[in-house]
Image (tube, rainbow, N blue to C red; front, top):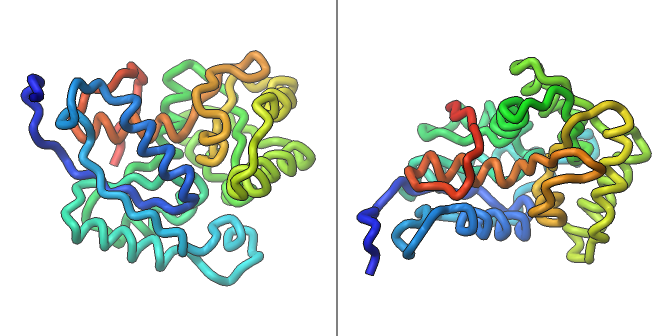
Amino acid sequence: MCESGIVSGRLVGVLGGTGPAATAYFLQRLIERTEARCDQDHVRTLAFNDTAIPDRTAFLLGRSDRSPLAALIEDGQLLEACGCDLLALPCNTAHGFFEELQGALGIPVIHMVRETVATASAAGLSLIGVLATSGTVAADLYGREAARLGVDCLYPDATTQGQVNRVIFDEVKAGRPVDAAALERLAAPLRAAGCDGVVLGCTELSLAFGGVTRAAGLPVVDALDVLADCVIMRAGRPSKTSKNLSLQN
């Protein structure tokens, strides 16, 4: 029997499938990061793991004419119709379509990229090195949000970006093991370029390196964990973390 007195809460829709393993890991992190003594203390979620959403990076890079926007909106509206009070989108690259998605819905969507930059800024980081898909880089999703908060943003050089892409697409999304030391190699050029922090700006990287707090001597900010903490707080649940989050939207 639950003694906490919490018997209900906001229903959070998880617009997932981009990719499916990262969505499952996000749900796991929600559980792990909630201060709970019983089932009823946890966040109420309704997850749609829609693996049919067209590839976000391919579209943003002009390699595909299949936009994911219609599917994202359709899925978001379905979750809204099911009674969800807010949405979480555990895919950084999909935030390239955030404004259109939010505009089509009557419930708020948590902006993972914005909240991650706000968390980095609150931690005192001034130049963040962002590891993400080429789609996120091409759309400058982190650079645009960083500029709003007076934070500088640096993406990897072409060689390192190629290595990031291989980890994301050829290893994590393909279900292959990732060398745990890979993050050190990816973060080292960012440190050499003057970054004072590293952002895991792809949920596949969160899946591969989740729980790592430092890489190449730099603090690591994991966008997926930031999103989990935002969801916990928005749902009115107590969090195990004390992150200083900017709860916008």
